[in-house]
Image 1: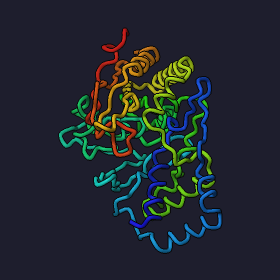
Image 2: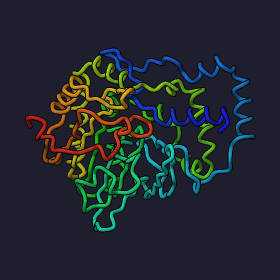
Image 3: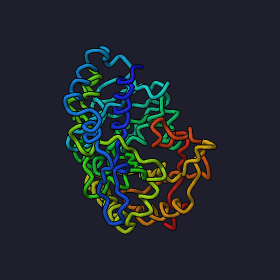
Image 4: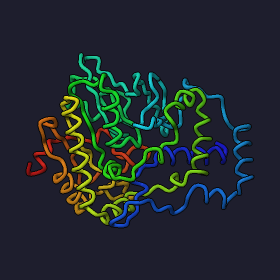
Length: 363
């Protein structure tokens, strides 16, 4: 692979995995972004505007291939429609991560379809990239299959699709909702996406109307990402590791976090009542609850952090008339480094085991 192409693929990968958790400041009372190095400043410093345009021009002339939806994409396509983030609608496409290829098939609303040939029922699932199953090829590999073996899954989820975006989906698409649904909460990032300043449009490169065109001409995605890196200060090449994310959480104002969690859960219950929904609520622990031991290629549970996270979960989520079942993922004293997905920001689905929240809290 040519150096320039390799670099552009790196920028695509980095931008594709931006989340509010990566952008939070460590300030205790402020969760605003602190830009250590914006993409714009980086490029201007290194090349200058004229050279940037020349490089882009040369790249598209010399290095791009004529790709289409039949080829395997190097990125997961998703777009924002001003209400929620979703995958391409009524589509089938392949995404390659490392050496592994994953096939996605979606319905008219961008829901990923994972079928169980032995099941007669379908259950709708809502959330972000953790529940989408970035490392899942078939339904048997998905962590929800253990609890819902008699169901096929329709997963309305995408990277940077926060809890309030899920609520927007429910309100916008009432006519397709089943009476019972699953709503997930990824504590890694949703913890920060419920704060007042969260704006998906600052972290999602594509508008939803661009998704079909991107599937036909994937190379255009790189141009859009580069444009955001140059012109949008919220895009960055810097991604925080587990250690930095732990520092952010420890220094955060826990009262602000708890108040926002409680506020969100009350709104979710209100929506459930208004739409007459029965919700199973599922919480997954953050990937950054583990410290990285690179020498031994291990993930080691940070017990102090685990205690604080679990305390926050127990104080914020309670059973109700519409949310009668709440599950939380188990933690392990240690995992292999490989138990993180390719982007190092999600736990692999086969390492997520769920238990009733009441068994972990005094509910």
